[in-house]
Amino acid sequence: MTSLTVRTCAKVNFCLRVLGRRADGYHNVETVLQTIGLWDQVRLAVLPGDRQIRLQAAPPQVPADETNTCWRAASLLAERARVSDGAVIALEKGIPVGAGLGGGSSDAAATLTGLARLWGLGLSQEELEEIGAQVGADVPFFLRDGCCLARGRGEKLEALSHVALWLVIVVPERRVVTAQAYAALRRGATRGRRRGVTRAVQRTLAAIEVGTPEALASALHNDFEDLPMTGIEEAHQAKAALLEAGCLGAGLAGSGSGAFGIAADRESAERAAARLRASWHWVQVAPTLPPGESMLISEAPDLMPT
Image (cartoon, rainbow, N blue to C red):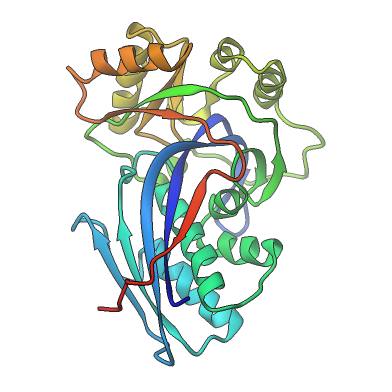
């Protein structure tokens, strides 16, 4: 096999606490992450003996250079495994950029998984997650998928029970730059180690054990919602619209500017989305995904390097 296609998903945060700034410039977090059925597609092909990484991206505003997470993931993987072959990567975005839905991290995870298979590397899950953590804090989660409690930078993962939910996602036109959002939180340096999780996370974990849409809707929390930023303010408007449209609860996706609502069932989600599309330019309905359904890999023998 010399080429394949990876369909890779988005995520939301049922709870996100930012605890403090680390010595490496990142922040320690406690967050409950959940994969959802919104998709990007990453097509990969081997360039035998080439050593080059060639990236194509659509739509045109998506960077197709060294700043793209797919390129960085491929480069790190090749360096780590001392690969002599290169790769062509064709990225097609369906997940909005800058909305807190994790598309860039998901694309990187798809690239690592696909190229490890194409290059025949035989790396363990732990090795892939270690490389992924160098690309972005959420990449190890997308390599693991499902619902997880993430701590540290996001690389310390604990699998949680799956709760089948239907979500309504709204993405405002104005987006939030993640680095700017973290800087605006003004968290001090991390001091010592926490023995347990914060109360907000405890409430979310308890809601997952109950396993109903109503329980999860009542336990949503995100530290970024208190920021006085334009993109966050628009996310608040989206949250209010989601609740008015009939969602049981609503929250911010990552550091924004996307917002999501938890619906009682699929029919309720579709009705809410239909109402919201009259006022918001990007509205989608998506289910939560159980482990094993977040990255769909298929062979693509006709994909030729360009």
